[in-house]
Structures are given as C-alpha cells and as structure tokens.
Length: 81
Image (cartoon, rainbow, N blue to C red; front, side, top):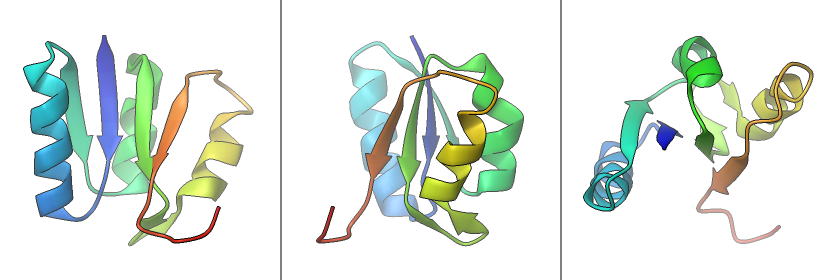
C-alpha cells in the first residue's frame, strides 16, 4: 500500500512515517499541499494535516474529491471536530 503523508511538522511527519513504514507500508512524505497535489494520484491513502503553510487540508480534500475517491485520513492537533 502506498501512503502519502502530508505534514509540515518534521517531528510528527518522521514519527508517523516511521510507524507506517515499520508496518511494511510505502510512505511518501511531503510538507505542503503543492507537493501533495503532485503525488496524490499515485497513492492508495492520504494522511493529511489540516493546517499547512500553503493552505487548509479540508479545502484540499474538497478539491481532491472532484477528481479522486482516494481515502483521506485527517491528522490534526485541533481539539474540535
């Protein structure tokens, strides 16, 4: 399974990527939505941070849904749903 991890905080990205890779998953880690846009068509799952330096993960997902049904798992430090 190919996973695209979109997370701008290096410590979080490294920990999540390590955990996924240790389970035998192929992880591509990017820091921005611009980078994510270039990789989202080649993955089976996207782990997506909500707050990124170049935009909002919710908006990215909304735009992604117009062209793809790839599953998205949101990753956030927010306290509300």
